[in-house]
Length: 326
Image 1 (cartoon, rainbow, N blue to C red):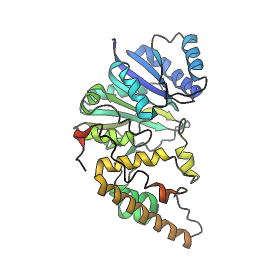
Image 2: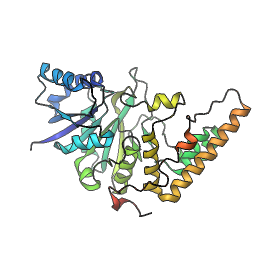
Image 3: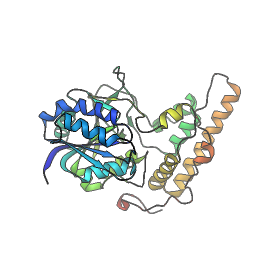
Image 4: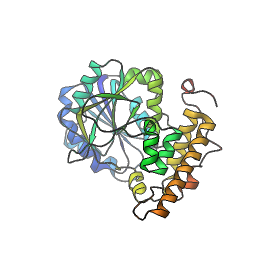
């Protein structure tokens, strides 16, 4: 099997037009490095594969693009794992379908990997189409961060500021606990050492959990703001729009949340996360009563949904060496 310098994995789920836009932004990068793009169709059930194959043929791109039909919806982790397993490379770039790569971004990521051998993962600056930056670097979720999230009040946030998850956008390269997987470069050595993504996470929290294993293994996670990638957000997932409208979030979000807290903090940590979230939600509810301008960010039925899988979170430890048995 040919080994490439870079393999780019893109998951398609009913977003062929977005994938075409990504590919258009990648065409200029092909001549700059030994590169293979793998598009995994997660059982879209539409004409995605036909449209994407047509684009590949019309653009004479069969030498650098491989289309894979997953056969069923394997989720974010499963789809990326399928793509990673299909090709050998020194570096793997996980790239969302709702992104557009700015000129030079990929080379900047590869250069940063060469210049920072202790960085196991490197991410770019994510931005909107008008170049406004997005927050894409974070601290790990903790039980206390659940209190901050549900309370959504400045007093609580300031009191526990060192537990705030989303970190401010900065203009200098820096290291973080985890980064968005909308676009992230991962060394092959990291995957060999810590394993692939945990496909028990259908969607959400898989990026945090993988980053946790990476950091536990002694690697650093670097963000370089001079590499720019547009992130349109929500191409294959309704979560952000649902959360903004306070609609009920999909069950798989809470299943992933439960698994994450159980893996990292054990059953007692999961219980603490749910209790602290509930306390924060009560703070938000009280504030709503006394302030007409304040609006809670609690989604419909979230009080109940955070307990999904609480009594059955212990699905298989995919990577048991990184966690204490609980």
